[in-house]
Amino acid sequence: MRVVLICILLAGGAGATAQTPLQKQNELLFQQLQEIHGLSADEMRDIRAIFTQSNVMGQGNPAVTQHPVTPQECAAMLQKQSVKYGDSQFERICGGKYMAPLFKPKTTTAEHAKACIDQFEFPNIPCVYPVVWVKAREAAQICEAEGKRLCDAHEWEGACAGSLQPPDYIVDLVKGQEPEIAIHQMRIAHNLAEQGSKTWSYGPEYRQGVCATGSSKTPGCPGGNWQLCGSNTYPAGDFPACHSSSGVYDLNGNAAEHMNLPLNEQQMASRGSKELGYTEMKGSWFIFDTYRPHEDWCRWRAPFWHGTRVMATNSHANYHLGFRCCKTLAPTSSPVPVGGLLRQKRVPPSAP
Image (cartoon, rainbow, N blue to C red; front, side, top):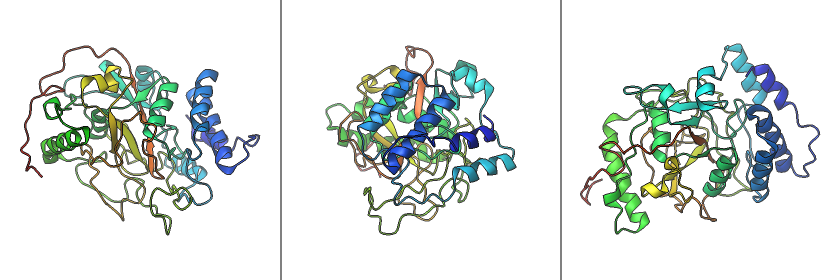
């Protein structure tokens, strides 16, 4: 998609009939979704209905949000640097714009991918701000309305690290445990197994200035407050170097992202689950260069912050928290490889 077209779309929406600044902002977003992704009238109706049920979902509270870069500045920068997002091979494989195949390069090719992931945070459009203040439940519903689904945690990790690994939701640590305890133990096991090969979407070491992490927090923002906390994000794709070898952008920085953390195979979105598992926060956010409260390497799994079932009506929403979607391309009914979902691994209770 040419940057010029993006500029035209960003300038549209003058005829929107929304009554509040947030509704007006969302109306432009709906127009961009339909134009760029070719969504049908029924798909748009369903997405509008999900937004209508929320009083806060959108690109941030217009009254307090201060974006460091405008969409027009983003488009001009990309044009100046001759950056053109979009990949015809990816579009053919994934059946839609701005999606990247998920696969393991050492053993297969993009043509044999069984799933794809959005290249940018929702709405998955370059030079458009990510949607935030969205609950995990709402994220899953929006993905479904688009004909996609919420990603499983290991899929996001594979997109970030550049190689999709078999699922490693270690079921023997879950049996007989309360979910919060099981998730804590699974997290310890997973992070111990992966910490020796830390990597970020852009390379093997953490670097400042590569991703959308140089914005600021609204003075006086206590966190989780719609009135006081601006969603001071960058437009998607404003940092062209912030991408993985899989061709996925903004995995580090901009908005943190909802993912599905299954505790068993029946909760795996990648295997067709509709009930889904528990909430998992991935990535980092827009002030991470100056405030790093947690790790953000690709395969790191976070504590059970604000944890709920993904589909719980009280699932978490915040000013820096968004999502991206995945899409299943073919049935994944083949047996799980050794070391995958049913791997038996014991971790001592004293493990860090």
